[in-house]
Image (cartoon, rainbow, N blue to C red; front, side):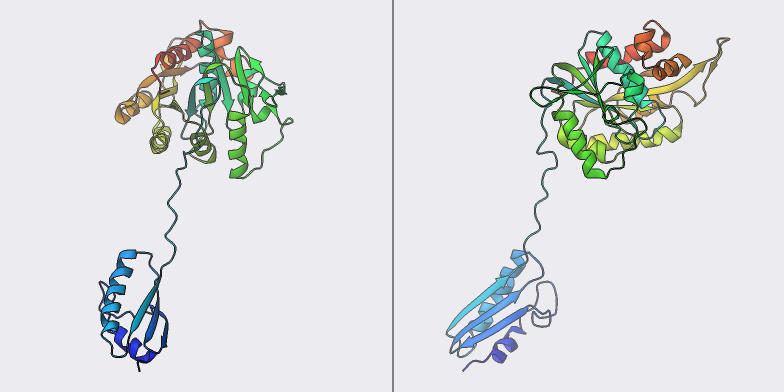
Length: 347
């Protein structure tokens, strides 16, 4: 009569594929049971590779069938569950109802004037005849309400959607409109994700030609949440001329590439300063944005010089494009807005 010891000894002749060691020393034998001439072997694998398991099963059957006293044989293979196939993080994207194009205004680092560009581009698009909205996704540091001169809270429609206030002809939404003065936002990532989704799909944006989204600096939760929620028609990168800013521009472009968002172009802000005597002073250097655009093979949308009027207009809530549309500062923003308006963006 065949015994479990006989079966185990026979299985010591089965080598693990690719190794000189046998499956017994590898610890694959989970159980051996013998009843008369009926043999059952349970093999426990740590790898979920079915091809390896089949090779071992075939060799075990060959050796055990040749063992005297074995009349029937069953080899039970126990493989770990295969790792789940990574889900598509963009599978649940949806267009924002009533919005033609969604464009992100981004920067690799803070302090480059990204929000200033966002408000002036939104107002510039409106001045050029487009219906524009502006969504502030900088949850921790919302500045859009101040720069757009908005202090009224959104109302709620009969369909239970937030109705965004309108400033200078632009629909505006920001977490800053829902907080009391100086109230900090102390949230973890999931709360930011939920808030951005609500600002996209629970706000009455319709009907808009453009929705500009002012992103916080960097490549964190807000950026990823936005890209997963809605198929962006493009991204605009704002930088200043110096290398410290340009090095993180590359990270911003790489982020957009990874999430399949076309880079519409680069804006060089704070490009230079015109002194009262007419002298041009390049405080942060000059031309770095254009050179980086060439290096990245991305459009260069234009340069915005340093003008005190830009800061002053933002501080009082009337962007320079609105308060002084013929000023050189406003004309710089209008030039970029026109380029965006005229682009054949992804639909």
